[in-house]
Length: 121
Image 1 (cartoon, rainbow, N blue to C red):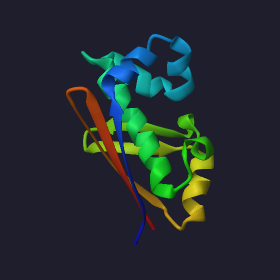
Image 2 (image 1 turned 135 degrees about the vertical axis):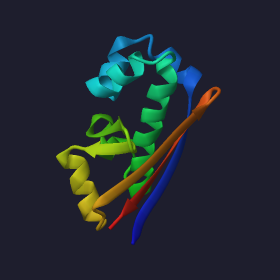
Image 3 (image 1 turned 45 degrees about the horizontal axis):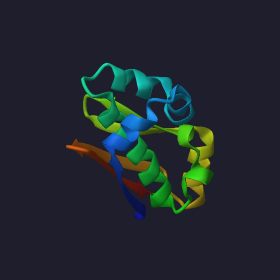
């Protein structure tokens, strides 16, 4: 049963400006997310997709980013597609709404990155 759906659109140019502050990267993204993006030709679009995934997760559960915590949700790219990795606090949020599985899809084109998250339980 679907417990929540969230979608978010993030401007790549906005993320690119935020990247000028190294503290922003450390505050928002995991080392893995940063490393993945920096190995690509346009890191900002990959970080924008990761940010949109975090926001989509928060929207899907109705918690908001403040309750979710930016570093409690991480986007990992795998050979079979993107997945969300959750820390125990984020896993607890899922349990509260009866969800035990997250589905995520990300894309980017031009100056925008989008993510959609479906919570299932």
